[in-house]
Image (tube, rainbow, N blue to C red):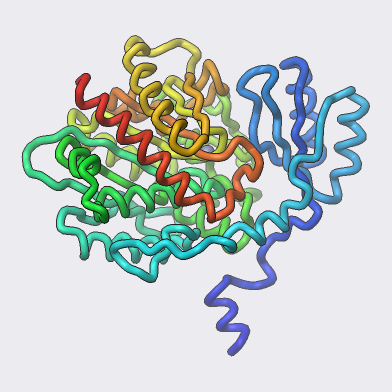
Length: 417
Ligand code: ARG
Ligand code: ZN
């Protein structure tokens, strides 16, 4: 009975991957050639690249398993690389992630804490609770994941009349938990307007809001129960050999889909693009939602972590969109509004030009495939101190600053368009 209780509450106890003694090394590369060498050498040690530098003088964060540390570090030294131990013990960070945060109640259900990370089941139930208690929010299902979980979203629309729509999603990458938690915060504010905040009332007058917290529920759940560092979905059907699981959903969208650009054809890689464009039900569901709002949706924000960046398309090419000036202008408004309030400094830039080229992204499809003009990737906190393992105590500040950025962005959009 005890085992059963443990199993239901936490998943099979023995299956949870541990990260004892694993470290994240922060490397300051001197040339792009050095980056390539390190990444290539890292394959031998099965390293997990957390963050690739967006320019020289910025850093490369690499997660290394405890038993590979010695070998990897020795090779870094022989390359003459500058590096430091950035995260001492990943397991400790993970164990502290969801504690030390006080309970901030949701307006829809006091038992749901906005300041903690939750299972996809709890989140799904909470969306229903929000739809029940809000006068102007409705809950919908965009589609189902590989394992059959509903991919739900909330539509918040306070006043009648035809309005432009803004779509915001989180959790496309399983381990980027803060993106899901921030969408839950946005839902609490936009769908419940708890403080009768006139700024939020005006947002609801101006736009219809589509808020989708967990694009990749299977991966998200797996990152909670089995492997905190999981990124992809949980598809296995792409392979007859069944060697590896998962497709990177942000390489799977069908606009200039191309695994050779920032993705991979190898199912065992972290950036496996799938067997073809939209091979995955999760990306298909969100792609359909975008297309069903063609002509109505004006903006799309695809939330990730980490890096504190507000990025415009394209990801598949370094060529720039013809309306770049408009895209830059709005991104600038959003990013600037985040900073003064919470001291989290956000930078703006282009996907391919300032981060790295990668085809098959949700943002590229939103713009190129569904005609959503103001389409962005927003990389939330932090800049690497905790990386993906952002303590729950920072959910509320992250939510507050993101909301401020979004309000400034949307206000300007309304005035301009
Ligand atoms: N970190 C994100 C990723 O690797 C960045 C995506 C930027 N957008 C793009 N279309 N490449 O998926
Ligand atoms: Zn991501």
